[in-house]
Image 1 (cartoon, rainbow, N blue to C red):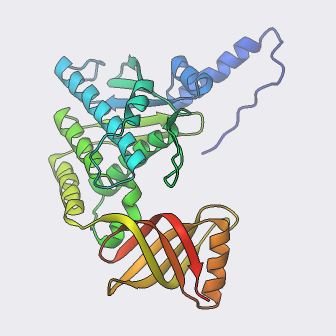
Image 2: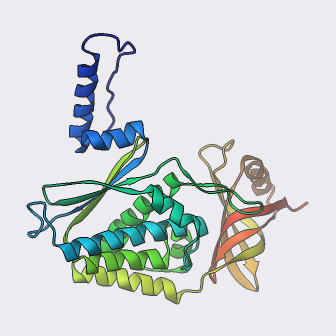
Length: 323
């Protein structure tokens, strides 16, 4: 649902402050945000993460010291490993890059709320966390880490706790941008150690608001998460520089002049049939369209994540169409 609030350009009138205050109160009531929250979102342009724990023991807004310490420590670990995941872009990576400390130092706890127990954390949104490097990926900003955490928590809730997943090579490749074994184990431990039955995560920024609701987190649901992680660990998942040559089977783009244009092609790699997916820039995509029309093979070299039968190129180093 979208709505608009019209704000006057002239703030010199006697009731301007009152008018703006009423506008902020309307926005705050709609999204359940305080004026302090709105200050973080609009003035500092950061993100407010709310973690709401609700059960019989937190109905008055109180939480035991041991449970609180467990909650805070697990949130810190999840933030740390989400940042590591965004920087390393690896399903199996367990290292903590030095840039993670910068992201955590920019996060800060805010005043808690009552009505269940609500912990609030200010997350940086526009800060540069990692510089771009030659022959590697570009810069990493804090907003990318915040978005990744929201994406992974939503994925766990919808697809694992409330879903029924069959882990295949195709599934791994299609969802690799949301899969990191260490982070998924963190989330499982978070639910278990903090004794969580109902917990909501809400992300509020100047661009977007999202609430992820988790109710009735049972032992059976956590077992599904545990088995999902085990299934990922049992699959071979390699990352390296590869060259694939094959025939295009699908092209997909909303804007061919943009930088997000999908191509899927079939090839033989090490004597095995392989389906490869890649994201092309505008020039590469237009060449791929012509190759598809002419039934010509394409050859793509780059860094890829690969299982036995599927691969997804993370970064393209060379793109060629056979003559």
